[in-house]
Length: 416
Image 1 (spheres, rainbow, N blue to C red):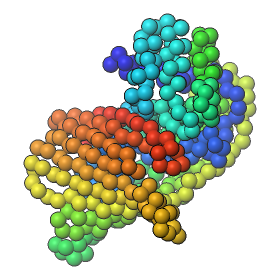
Image 2: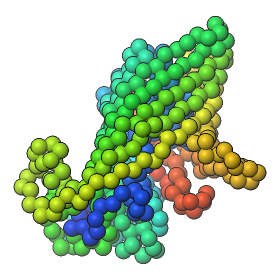
Image 3: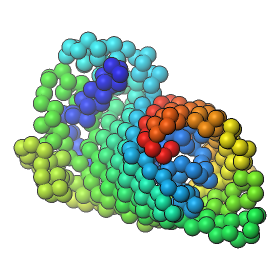
Image 4: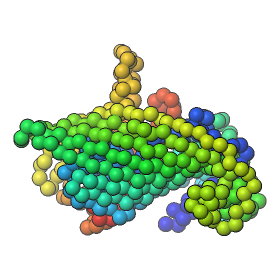
């Protein structure tokens, strides 16, 4: 717990940084590319299965990945589910940053921040995310409220001072409905489902590593700078998704999901958090000393994608329940490819995952994503549920360019 507290302090220092150097920009600008990604809450279970799970039913959040999973889902309620994810945990532990933070002195905090930021690799990446959600489903109807805090990184060179950090907060409300059609009794049924989502995204201007170090060293009023001096971009999107499951005997199902229709974001740039809060919420966080003015509007859209998968979940009784899932993401992008290009594309976009439930309280999971392995466990203790996953994600343009490892822990109550 002590280490978690120290890491939280470090992240707070990153968020509450010195005055900005350049204007907030749209995801069409290289530094803000990750801010344009389609919002998806961190799913520890799916990540531990290599990112596969389109047809995996029976979990409270299954419909967030595939709306068709709402069909026959029954009553589920999770209040709340909280997920913590730390990226490059091995590098951070080996850097000595935590030991420096433990000293509690200004010099120790500066040294710790330098070592912590030194773990950032060139190109795109992430430092930490925190997710919280409340999910409810009954009779084919589903409702989810989600929020996520994410710290993204963008480093232009090998030197630590070229590292930039971008803090982002996303909130989403999802409403969905699913139905099951018994097409051929005892042989084939079809699940269909749709979801509508309202997403509000807010991200701050990128901050350089040198400005972060200087802020800590000078012991400046971090809260005031964060609230009044850092420009932000904020806006919303109303994406739609639809899914279909074709179910066969022996637990075999085929799934198709179309994601992010109407996913265009309408964004506005504000000179500070307090300025945004005053205009959007009608209040401010303390005294508003903002001196800048609004800097305009812009739009961006990451486009819609079609995913497909096959899932095998045979019913072998209550002692052991296996699941095997194979998904292919963004299948439309494979059209037109041939020979080696098609093989590479298929490999890059295929996710493999397996899960075994033992004695109705323990899940053991394994997956492969672009050749990177993932592992995870789930533990159910009455109404308490804990899920853990250790995995790697590729942030480079090609396989092997920039893999980053991550550790996710999720805690939830009531339905699993």
